[in-house]
Length: 299
Figure 1 (cartoon, rainbow, N blue to C red):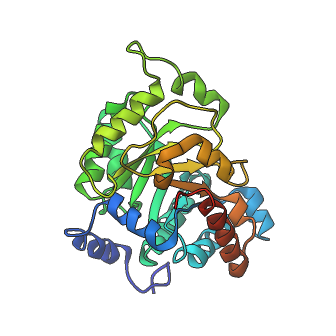
Figure 2: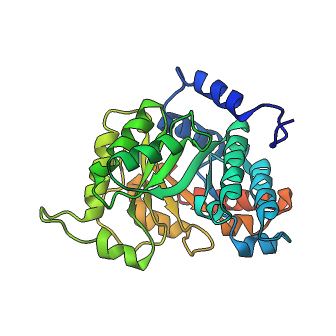
């Protein structure tokens, strides 16, 4: 028996995963189909110490694994996208990263899409190494998509974008985030006139040109940002963290995204996971979030 209890070695599972990639749809198409099936919601797996405590778990490896894998078991077949937050696993060292590997495997085995929330960004060979880790299926940490920071220049992400594309996986690029500090960079004007966020959005739009139903590159736009004149229709998915516990409401989504609203996946963590660990309460929290969001979707 393997450490994850499956009886299948990680290398065997990875080989099987890689062999099945040849004819699968790209990430954008897979996500579009998952949203049609389950509704437009992303749930973050954020094993914050306070959430572990609320679940009656210790802030250690056993508590981390129990929390994360219980979440996957309860939700993976009910939502379009699960988003493990890498930092909360990394804080436990190599044992925490090993748990993260098992969590990603659980998500994909259950038939859900996995978005690694790692927010990586660098240049050259370093970005390529991040790509090898997070979107190359031969890696035990590989997910269906990864979040990335473009603030060393959008083209600095080229190795990540190209590697993800080659393997039919995706990248969500930070565009406009909800934290107050983000505005210093993201809303600043470039020498040519558009905002930095506008340049990022244009770059993503270019990556997705001609792709149907969605391209493989998405953007991250906070569900609580101030008014913006930016066009969020990038022919790809728009991840909107901050929905729920951080204050984002359905009306905020309508205000921010306008005609791009059908492409938006609100992302929530604490407002849903706070109802755990009882699976029935987690299911009810997901249903409430989806019902709230659907009230603002166009008919």
